[in-house]
Image (cartoon, rainbow, N blue to C red):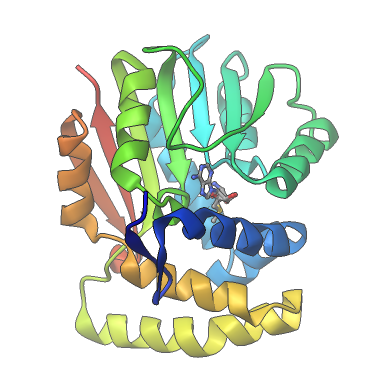
Length: 246
Ligand SMILES: C[S@@+](CC[C@H](N)C(=O)[O-])C[C@H]1O[C@@H](n2cnc3c(N)ncnc32)[C@H](O)[C@@H]1O
C-alpha cells in the first residue's frame, strides 16, 4: 500500500495513517470519557442509548462493539441485555486498558472480552456475531471499505450493523455555528481539560473529511448490506446508520 489518504486535513501516506491515529488516542485515553462529556455537553450518552435501542439486540446473542475504546457502549449494552456475549475490540491498547478497568469497576467483565485488533482485518470467523456496533470509530479507519466488508463478513445472516458517527449538519446556519465551535472552542477545551489541543483539532478535521450521510449509506450498501437507513440527530451533526445482512 503506497497511496495517499488524509489524517484530518493533512495528506499522508496510507501506511502512516494508523500510527498517527493511534498517537491521538494514546494521548487522549486518560481523559477520553471526561472530554466526551465536556465536548458534547453529555449528549454522546443520549446518542449511544439511541444507537443501542436501534440495534434491537436479542437475548443471548453475540455482539461486537468495534472501536469500542473505553467500553461505555459495552456497559450500556450489558445493562440492557445482561446475557449478551460481548466483544469490545479496538486497535489502541491504552483505550482498551481504560475499557477493561471500567468493566471491572462497573462489574460487567464476566460476559465481556477485550481484543486489540485492527477493524480492517477482523480475526473472527465468518458469521460469528449477531450484531456489530461501531461508534465514532469508522471515521478513523484508513480503509473504511475494507472495515465495512469485514463487519459484513463477521455478521450472521439477518445480523445487524449499527454505525454512530459524526456527519453533515442539514441547516447552513447551524453548520456555521458548529464549524465555529469545532475549530475554535474544541481545541481550546482540549488544551484546558486534557493539555492537548492537537488531538481535538484532528477530531474536528477528521469529522469534516468523513463521508456525509448519503455517501456513507452508499458505502454500506456497496459492502453488501441491505435495508440501510440512517437517522439524523442534532440536525445531522451525528447520524446513526442501521443496516442488515440478508
Ligand atoms: C473516538 S473513539 C470512539 C470510542 C468509543 N466507541 C466511543 O464511542 O466513545 C475512536 C476509537 O477508534 C479506535 N480505532 C481507530 N482506528 C481503528 C481501527 N483501524 N481498528 C479498530 N479500532 C480503531 C481508536 O483507537 C479509538 O479508541
